[in-house]
Length: 253
Image (cartoon, rainbow, N blue to C red; front, side):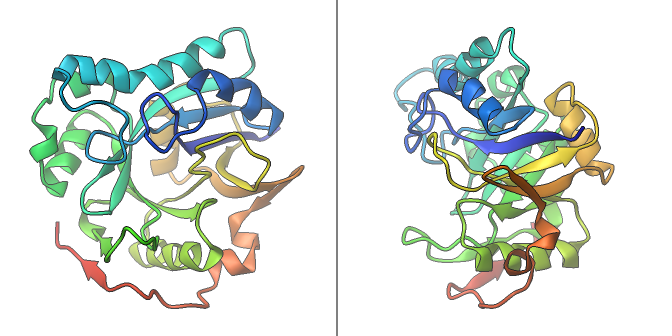
């Protein structure tokens, strides 16, 4: 039996754009066929719902609240809830897996870090860094920023992106030779297509997820209705049809 995990999920407690309470996700994700999910709310330098005037420990506490609500609601149910982070720089965003509350509390200066400093700190803590939706184009973005030197993996299928942007990310990940991930980037409970990572065994923790990913295990999949389809089998998700319209900047970070 395959096990499918959502890798990119937002709650209303910590993400300003979130529309679903963390507590609402366990039952919903079970109904959609997931074995678990990783809460990756926008951090303070992104579209965060956490007030800036709070002290650092208070900000971290509020940031963790969506994840904690989901974890509590999952008690006694056949679903796993893990913690992650979505960290923003200049529109380029990164999914951090394998760092947690202690790491956040120990690093109150992290908002001043460069991309390379973030990468080094995440690795020192045993975590990994995956660039989210690298070829995303939105009205609030003025460029596409690629950072090949600091990415452990690339999110090649984001269910909130059009296929043409996912295909560009797929080609980019192939060129880098790094692990590929898929996720829904879900903000609200809906019946639309979703993305996730499929494994042949149950994962025990977010650290387990990171280790499996870096070992080359796991298959990026799309979920539509009752169908689970490997992303590689969906032509418009992996074949580039449209070049980016925004300028593409590659940083040597």
